[in-house]
Length: 589
Image (cartoon, rainbow, N blue to C red; front, top):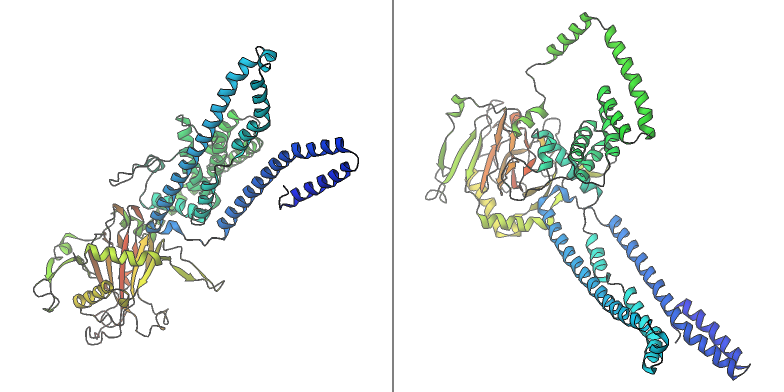
């Protein structure tokens, strides 16, 4: 009867000693002691069962916590391809949760049937208790029910039906995204909002440009979370926008666990931080109309009122002359110059493209065989001029569907986020300017990779033996690559020294997916924009024939607004091109 647990061993030892003691005192007392052990042992078993259940629950919680914090961070938000795996993980968890619900419902149904049976029995028995128990069978069954059957009901009620679900959840949790992923996805929405000049209502209602069947809306809690993430970065501009959207949806009657007082508290402070004292005061007064005892709001009310009075007094003392001078300075400060960031965002929106009709008339489409290359004499490739300076060429139907799928299949397990060397810490850190994941494929790994490399060489006429491996990239939520050069500048003399193949002379870029909205490749210096088209590739030279860098090739990948963007690129180097692209005599030849 004794179990191996420490608690049950102690109980058995004590009762065995008591039994030996009682045996020395007489048969009747021995019988009494034995009866005590028999009736109390079941209680000990139940107590031990509860302890074991408690310990198991604690262990599960600890295991989940350890997995949560010890699992390797995967930067899920930087790759839509990797995020698709999360959907199947979630689907599996839903199936597991449904199984748990069914098991609980089955258990409750058994308890319900037992309760209904006993309810009818006790209702009849209590009308004439003595008469009912006068029947010996009823008396026996009452003893049996209370001694045995109610214990079985207790076992059933205590039975934990969640083991399967908890085990599955514990296993899957190690693959869950973490706080950094949630923050990254939130910041991606804010980036899309700014780049494509979307208002919060458009994003919240899911009415984004493009035609996607999977429309989704944001709740008050979602808007509030976006505002909080912006607030944690002291980004009071976006905090105000999203807290105002949360307030709007609350005012429209949407039910939420987020209360209006909390939203107004964040909203008033974010507006104040942007110097809008009057509006901050209005929001604070509304907050106090809902909660008149809000201590922070009461303090802010006095402070904002004092600051507003002080501000108005200062404005009244300012002379008209000074005001006029200030306006002139503002006007003088506005010129035709636009910072690169604004140029980049304009091009992403399809604005600011600088191509005159005369220049555009010189762009052509043609069939290209690369000086009658044997492979393309009969089947030349379709070539289109995308831009003239720098010359950007697009090749149509240059990679097949099967080839693209094979490249994605090979790359997906290896996709990793881009890293850069941090000069302060000396460690590799994630590149914040590039929201994507990439992988490298060598020609020997699969015939498809080898064939693609050979195709690039045949079409461009450049030697790819000294080129870098094929890089495959998949962009994440709002995925982008900020303006950059592909070649090494003069201030980076050792950029590709370890390769020993010279500078990057040219770039070949495959588009392996269509993008519903956003995701263009733009060149801010010249005002060019190239849209992704599945199965096409674009090509340009990064260096002039003289070997000098062409700074007009500075380019960027716009944030993906809707869709999934897959690209692969080949960086071709100088070595091996000496006779294929002879050096020019002038700097910009």
